[in-house]
Image (cartoon, rainbow, N blue to C red; front, top):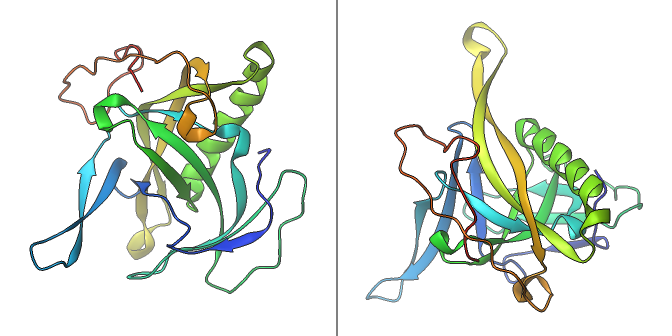
Length: 212
């Protein structure tokens, strides 16, 4: 994967809202933080698996070390393209990626981040980035509109240690001008009309373009 920002550690104060992929269930969520009548913050997870579409800033995707802290801010130590990975901050940190994206209109057209450390996710993102590299020459200055085609189960271990995770399968549907939220001037708005399906994820081709 060609990936990149300068080496730095970030915390929740630097952190945009995010999308979350649960590899154990094969589902995408959009955690939303709200305050109740007493001023207490709470997080509600909105599922966004079916019809998942986003403009992904694969040009500026970064890699490095990530630690997801329960009840606290994640820790990110990321690197620019071509730079060696920085020293591992702790034994609990894992290699992963971090990038920004803009969700489709059905999910609020929100500017969020997406990161992960699970191998069942790193592989598909690596493949997605390869597809981005192959297509960017014909789409200068543009970013890909990426959709979730399906998820596939991957079983590892045996006996009491047997576990099943779900790997997301992505595809690039089209290319659009970089949205203002991702540092551009905006441009063509992809459109999509998600179709209700009994399956967990819409099959490839069932989603058209969706405004962002």
